[in-house]
Amino acid sequence: MFLAIEINRLINDLQIRFFNAATTTQRNNSNSNRQTDNRRKKRNAIWWTRELEIKRSKTHALRRLYQKERNQQVRSIKLISYKKNLAEYKKMILTKKKEKFQEYIN
Image (tube, rainbow, N blue to C red):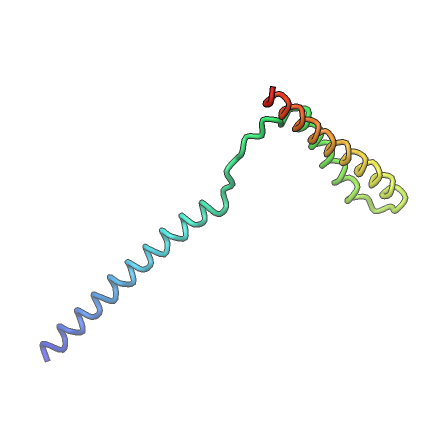
C-alpha cells in the first residue's frame, strides 16, 4: 500500500515536471520563431533618396484617393492620375538605380 502511494506520487511529480519542461520549451521556441519570421532585415538601398520617398508617398496618396472615390467619372480621372504617377515613380526608381550603379562602376 505504501509502495503504491509512493509510486503514484512519483508518477505525478514526473508528469508535472515533464509538462512544465514541455511548456517552457514550446514557449521559448515559439518566441524565437516569431521574432525571426516577422522581423524583416532592413536592407540599405544605396540608391534610395528623399526624392523617391516623397514620390512614393504621393503615389500612395493618389491610390488611396482613387480607391475611396465612389463617383465613376471622378474615379476614372483619379485612376488615370494615379497610374501616371505610378509610372513616373517606377521610372524614377530605375533611373536612380542606374545612376548609383554607374557611380559604383566608375
